[in-house]
Image (cartoon, rainbow, N blue to C red; front, side):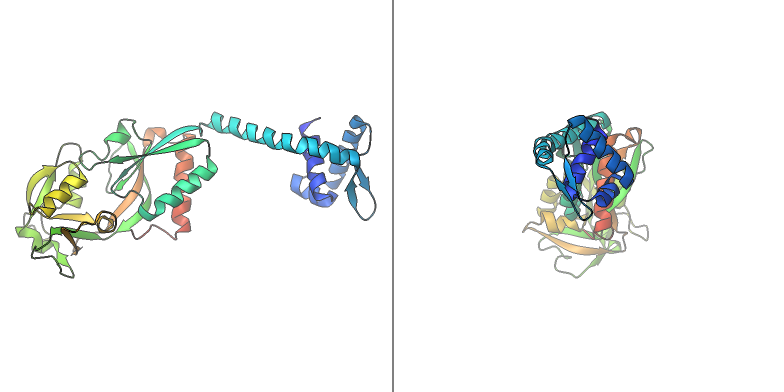
Length: 303
């Protein structure tokens, strides 16, 4: 039995209507009728009983359908798996993330990707701001959700998934704690933190500015490598730090207050990938899942 004969027979058995069968298969009704007749000649008996008003399966046709339908499902699944393997959608995709990653969109993104690539395992890996791009560059991750700006010639940025306002993390009892907001200009007398080697200087300067808008310097104290270390230093009164707003939502703690920070730009979180990997099936399918999740949300999530 040829594949077109098989698909025509199974579709007509489900529709019991030559017109609808032709529409589903994108064929003419005459082609459907010819294919069924050819198959019946091969079998040696009618598979359908036709009248001017209806089409019904013959007992032999019903028996053949019951035997072939589950085999066809398995055959299609096997072909789909083979295509996935050929396209490289099997295997494992490692998604690195800084902080809360894609935030509230994470579940939707992963659900869309797993629905389209069920044979590809997804592994999540946390990164630290001491070396936010290292796992991606080193091949330990395939994609990365991190805060912008990222201005590296070997990395591709996009799409943006979150747009966040900025907050100032301060210890309880600090002069800013409990206020409705604070300006970066008022932070001239405060101590921020440096970062250990690995993070691009422009990246850290954006998130932890070294100067106020008017140009006054902001002292940088101890260099930190990870988020929990930063929060501990803030809680123990060794400095304050600008953070993105989702930190309060996902990482709040009783010994730290978060105050809206004015006169600083909002922060975007985006998907980052290696430019050299563009076009690989796993990467392209994941990027498509991210774009679709953002579009379904009406644009980047607030945070």
